[in-house]
Length: 155
Image 1: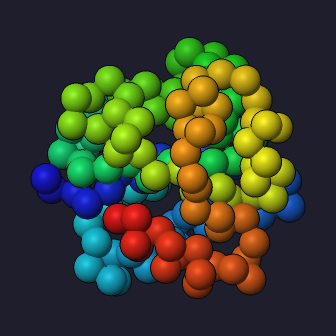
Image 2 (image 1 turned 180 degrees about the vertical axis):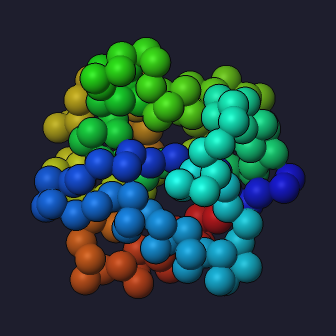
């Protein structure tokens, strides 16, 4: 596999007004510095056929780290503003369908406090597939290092 992990996340602002993309980018940089190869979509990698790039990168990834916010859960379940035509949904669905990935190779990471309680997640694919799994809690900035340790153990 070319990548240890494919990173899927929403670029929006979370319930505490924090940039989720910035926070996930920080995690990506930390993992990269620790020697992990991750596929992370940022401003520099979104040129050309983005869907093909995402699909090819998922095929070359050993697992998928799913950074969960309320907004991500809605979008990946097809209930966001773009409906079924959303990159979060495309990444999540593609990962579920690839034989070497699927739900067993997805690591859920909770990024905002309201997502700590799975029962409160919006209904849909993400809740149905990831809700039963244990998650890494990175919703509190004070617990960043502990969450990162937990995530690296999962990787």
